[in-house]
Image 1 (cartoon, rainbow, N blue to C red):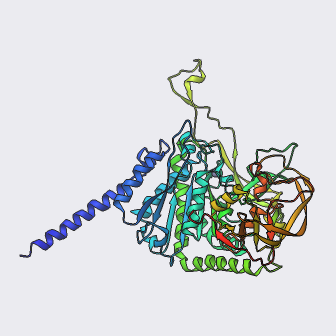
Image 2: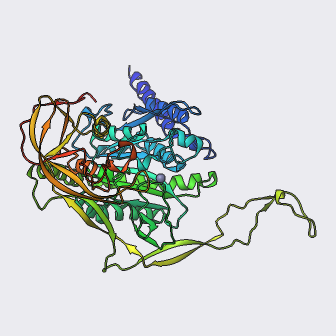
Image 3: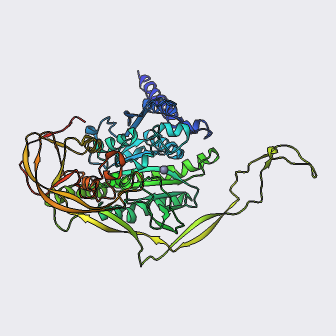
Length: 561
Ligand SMILES: [Zn+2]
């Protein structure tokens, strides 16, 4: 009676074959259409449903929902958890491994970021990347802006530029990104975008705000970025650290709708120090945080190629982190623990930076980069009809030529190269801030950031430091800090009332809290008109610093959030 065993054996082989062939055949929505259409929220739901049914390592969670607007219904936001253990919640995460969190296409017209994220999810769930999950946990939010993807526009359904919304957190998607970050505490994050067509097919930027520990920037520049470059080189994909050009003396990264009033020179620098983007706003928690920018012509003809560049970049990051899990865990967790200690210690030589400048570096006086130079192509178009010499030719008879021959590669030298960041203004770290009961709008933003807020439960007299405004030139646009704001710090005995709030700096957001709440911060809530936080000259700023111990009776406020 030996025949049963082989039968079962071959049945297992057969089922395995069915399973693996189905798995490896599973196409992403863009692959299904051969990259002739951008995948939409419904396509993604179908794809993730199929994929989850075939994979024990993928769990998809509904993690948020966009707003319903007149021309587009509310849509689900998905988070894909890819773990060897197949966990479905943050508590189950194996913390022996580092966790990477990718989020894509905050800007809706940067479509290849989303298509590449879907390909990464598939290859981790059932493809050749699955073995990485022995070393690393991966979280992917493949579509951050369904409305923007549908209309192929940058903004979300309420007109927000989501990647300038990470301080005030008005968008459902930005709130969702920060909720995921707070729940899962990833050590590594990457925000995936597209920029204009560029010789460098993949650009990756690391953290740049001075409040983020310098060792994260150093590790990014010494280990992660060269690692990505090497892996891309093998695939003949050009790479550079992400560079930004801006007007000299004008910082347009705030998201304010401003343009220079006079002719200005262009400067080159690394990505912004602002905390309003998906990179520094997570980096501020001592995270190895990155932005990837894929080169893009923003047309369907190039969708497949540019999705591949993006995919190879995000894949390279996962491979590098999986190569060095212990090193990355001890770097990031060590810095996070240390930040808590620094917040308790409040050393005089450990202030919080509020204003920064991009400056030159004499060891690196100029930037040498390659770029495409558009040269007039001799080809005017492709004939749609048969013509003979001497015939008339109308514009309608020509379809546009999309080939690459109109570009040549040149080497450029940029003299206005500002690779370093320097502090312009810093303040000492307070114990925390007292926020009057009426400032619920401020409290709500802090809560959305995952910051612990406490309510004062018993009236008490406390010594606070108050800021009196001595000189003020208001901002010329929403999203900008006042052009000038000078203050005098004054010690006051103040009655902390029942219902007022207290925010301690002794928490993971130790560096973010002063950045949001100080009146002279270039990164603060004071920049947004809706908070009405700018006082008249002579008046006091409405948020108070607690600099010495106080006897406060406190209850955690809205802890259930
Ligand atoms: Zn973008």
